[in-house]
Image (cartoon, rainbow, N blue to C red):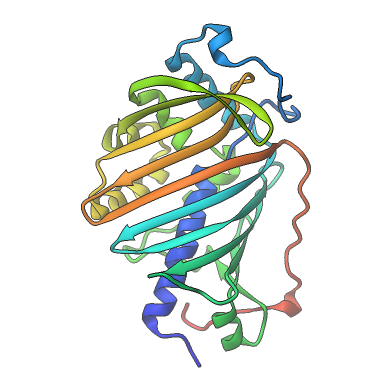
Length: 283
């Protein structure tokens, strides 16, 4: 049975959420650096101010080569869903990212969950409902053909990912207000210091690449999102190890939790062979 328009739309919404996660929630550290030892000193011991720590984290995030993470996305309002999964990404020399998610919508689990594989030119999607339609395990969605409802080409988003893989949310943290140190904690075996605060979403847009801003700003406005709350855990090497972000809009509310499990360690991502890939006409 061919999925309904609503079902396909919801599936693509999930893909969009995953793409945003790739654009904005990935993390990295100094080139070639290994995971920070658990005994690394916290920022409390170093005497750095919260604003300095956030600025350093935003700067170091651009140097990522690869990483792995666990991701949770919960939303309510116009879209009610929950996604839990893992992410591994190679950032340089080219972008390759693989995610595996379990998904529920309105409290009902989507059978088989979802896998996505991002390349510089396309998204490969694996969902049982779509796979049954095309008779292949993977669905190919090419960026050259995929456009938003307003006719905006998504290529700038992919170029942004390939260029420097910014920690989108970390990039805007230096604009935050009411930033304060919460305490220390161990995240995935690494000693960290937690900071919390909030920021004005409209003001934070100035920190983004113009092409990214053009894509993100209308979606935030439609959802009625004006402010964001965050908590971020940063290790002694100014690397983000965990980030919790909460948006409370008039039409949409969402919380994302990203825990970085490794930084700049090799990842193994294989693009599906052509024999395992199909497409949906008109999608």
